Image 1 (cartoon, one colour):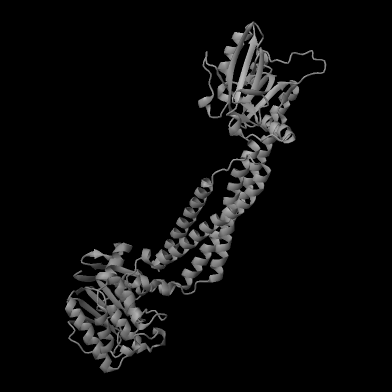
Image 2 (image 1 turned 180 degrees about the horizontal axis):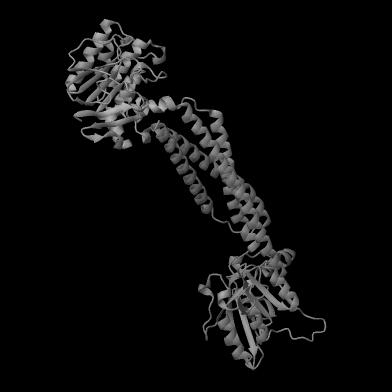
Length: 392
Length: 214
């Protein structure tokens, strides 16, 4: 019955205006967040191995080949002291001969000479449960560049009509590794525990590298030729400057990806800000509309208060109206988000089949927080408006 | 609530007037529960102001009004809400009904808040006051005299210690006025309540315990 009274003068057009504006605002905010989260892995590709804020440095190879391609301790210390550097790890290369053959069920059908490299374990942020080596063990964990698999699948297997191999299948392959050097030879089993897009090398645990270099090449020089450098901001200008001055080379691609991620972040931020702005504006439309409504119904509200209705009870219908609308907006925004997302995810999957799907929970949480914030503000504003009527 | 006391009370708009000769304003008056009062006034002497001061929706007065010794200026919103539901009822001169609702809905909107009367009893009042056929009519379409009767019923569907009626019969004939007064007094007596009636001339003859000139 109160509702019958208070719904008088409700302007459907104003509420529709709010509804549409708030829906767009909410959708843009949520979509910006979700899109950022969905697209980010493609650029940063922190698919386990090396995080985005790490750069790979090496010395530029000169045509004369006169300068040493390895880093001295002094150069390392100098780099370590640069303001953009957080920490530095060195790549260690195997100093002995490595031969490897792969096959299925013990039948070797693919063999090659190769090499290993290692970086300190803390730069490997894959699941490290398998990433360790114990002296004496015959099992060597290995991380391969993903491009190797692509070369096989799209180059070799395609042309020979061989089956394509997925990442999970390749981890099950038998891999025999033969280490030779210092008059020793040892056969070991290799196990592929992960793939990397960024690090174009065959990685083994550092503990294995230390042991094997000592065992098979005790006298070689193991000064590093490549560095992995953790930086605060990969797009820092000082990095480029330092690298040019010291004749170094950066994994360009990585830097580009870093920049792209940075721009993606900025763009998403701008879009989200616009969405928020629309949300805020729509909030004011609603408040204005409700104020107008309360104003038009002042007499009725006042009479209700005078015959003994509490301000809380009189505010409630309008509060429920706004909260209900906000809730419908939230749900509709989420449904639309799903719909839009399914559309662009299809495109993304077509372009990046190996892309992992990111969770939508942060978008839900953000939507929920927006809903709560707007609803609470609405409720408070309505209550305050009613209280001004109480005071006459 | 046993007493309503006005100590040296007068509307702020009278502050500059030296010729106030009133038995209420600037006096010490106590209304007691269980008694019937008539406040007679000529227009412009603040009759409706008196009601609004006591009912707590206007504070533009000097002096002090107290319920059982408590200054009503200090009452909180929740206390006023409780008072208006349980202890104090007012029938406004301007009625303050809702023209969009039917006559019955206008009463029920109050009764639903207090849960005080059954629908049967409300119907009986409608009948006794001769507006039974108007129960489902939209209030806005009814005459002022009929609306006055609806307002009276609404004022009665709650428990009260004091009932204030501001010119209740201005648009009623003598017979209907008598009927309404009887119903009002019947309910007030049943509740043991005090009744304060205001009037600018026309009023029903009743056994007033005290007649005050405003």
